[in-house]
Image (cartoon, rainbow, N blue to C red):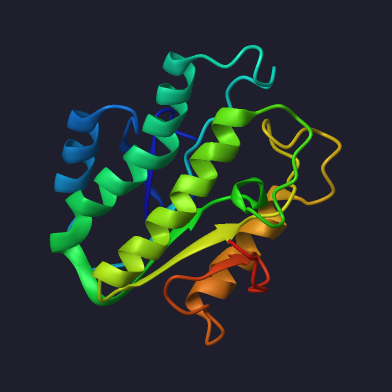
Amino acid sequence: MLALARKPGPDLPGVTPVAYDQSDESSIRRAASAIAAPVDYVLHNAAIRGDTGGLATLTADHLAEVMRINVAGPLLLTRALLPALAPDAVLSFISSRAGSFTEGHDPDGDYAYCLSKAALNRAVAKLADDLPQRVLALHPGWIATDMGGPGAPDDPDEAARRIVALLAGPACPPSGSFTDNWGLPIAP
């Protein structure tokens, strides 16, 4: 198993870290070239939340940065990995309910993040149309991470276990779907 990351995390048995910066196209190409075929699973998880000051503090540069990391980065990495993907690979993209038109009511004022997740959800639908592999968007839940905050009710390790079990199990959602980490559908 490979873990692409800007900052290597703790050493984990069976996990090889690969230096990677999702905002840098040359880093994306270098990381992809270090990955040998066949790749059976890809879980795009990197994202930034950015400014939460609402419309009053939104800038074009800030919006572009969030879109570059949250949308362009996963798409460019997917493109770079195409030659290594197994025909039945599962490509999953961590999204958010914040990107849903019907369920994404978010009082936090994080315009750029919400817009980026809506764009990512649409990109997943487009990739599902274009690729033979299974492609899906997943809402991980409200998790106690830096982004979710300490008051979030879900544990990161438990959410990760559910996501891995969902992607590798017989109930893996169909290509083009947007679900929570239990596999329950979310309206786009």
